[in-house]
Amino acid sequence: MREVVFRGDGFDLPLLTSDVLPASFRHGFTTRQGGVSVAQFSGLNLGKRWGDDPRNVAENQRRLRAAAGCDEMHFATQVHGREVARVAAGAAIEATARTNADALATEAPRTCVGVYVADCVPIVIADVATGACAAVHAGWRGTVAGVLAATLADLATTWGTRPADVRMAIGPSIGPCCFEVGPEVVAAVETAFPDARAAGAIVAREPRAHVDLWRLNQRAALAFGVPETQIEVAGLCTSCDRDRFFSFRRDRGQTGQMAAFIVREPSP
Image 1 (cartoon, rainbow, N blue to C red):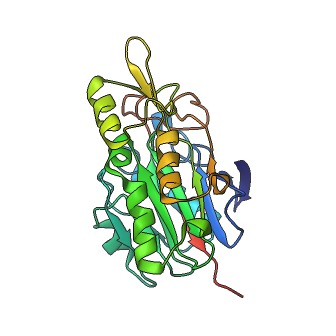
Image 2 (tube, helix red, strand yellow; image 1 turned 180 degrees about the horizontal axis):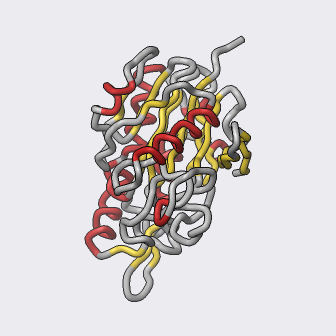
């Protein structure tokens, strides 16, 4: 995954992008850099949930839209589940925002879909044959619930997406180095992924085990049939890197939110 910098009117905004996705799908994972928020929200906080000045959030979102090349961006109300919402061309931003879902999918060109994160796993998906795309929010609950598998299945059912045509990027999130969990999470992971321990996605450590959400979501994609060479994992831990990323766990909830987005350009 590489960093590109969008140079706007008086600001520079870094985005992490994947070469696995073709250029016709504009996409990016934000960092905390390039914004106007201050204190614990310092930088590009895109979320309104935890007390940042709404004027700063609005400016940060304006900068993101400029970097994404989109006048509008669709985000749902994320509930740590497996619901997938489809976004049609011309859909109202407000209607999407009222929808409880952890994945947004669309086939419409110039319709930008995204998710907010602050440790959870952001995933963007492109179907190079049909032009469908999706953004997925996969925290540990969503990962266990199977939100990525549900998204891929919905793309297949709705638009005929085939595994061979999928290109996928798994962005920065809390890594196995820092995601320490209790026995109830380990039990939930093993129920959803019986081979998780053998696959190295659960690592026994003292005092508590660590879980690799990157590997679990990668395995969900592989189980759908996506070739491993068509999945890029950023491998960047949000909890480790205070300068680049917000982290809900590291900062005990006193933090901002990042975003991932994807939008398809229309065919010439």
